[in-house]
Length: 300
Image (tube, rainbow, N blue to C red; front, side):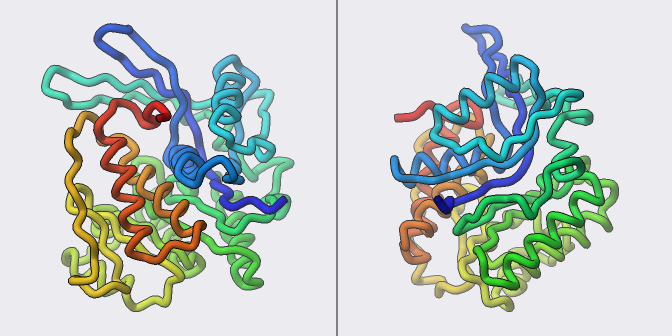
């Protein structure tokens, strides 16, 4: 059966230090977070799949179990005998400032599409979603194959492609490669979910209006430019047609704010909601997510 959403990227074990409980293990990664929040917001009938590679270590097995508990189809998760799932640890100091430490350079996800798995084997989906982080962690040859496959899918109108540039300079070989690859994806994608700060950092836009004008020049199926607490803006809605975005009642941890927005937005889009309601759906879940620690908050 055709998936509603297929999300592609890297998931890691999240080791979170908590004052009372010591260390708690969970699982997170930008595209995985989006897949989970999309499935939750869409509801029980959601058909959401995740594509990545993990190892055969205990944390990898625990991830598969956790993903299934969220209703995520893991049939596209490859198993690597030689590498393990990536890991990151996060701690928060007395002022609320977060510190991250990563063990991901040799993760199994770095081999996605570079061995027996090929993009052509991906299942049919209404929307294929990926991010700049997805592209950054792939080997250059695998990145090229994935982009070529997505270009072919869009050329045949076989699916919609949703993309978030999610620029993390430290993951890329260099800024020029990042710029070139992300430009290619903006040419392919028809659902744009960028963050204002990422676009300015990557492309050197003069400011918010320049970013909005650049995205307004393309005929997207849907487009939401994330602006943090101020709420998103769509270049295809008049400014006075945007809804009021209520601020989060409490901000504890901004991890996965953008990822959860993407999940809520895509769930609403898949339900056939208009742009205004999609923006509200994304902002609503993001406002809830920042009020609790961790990338994936507890299910209601």
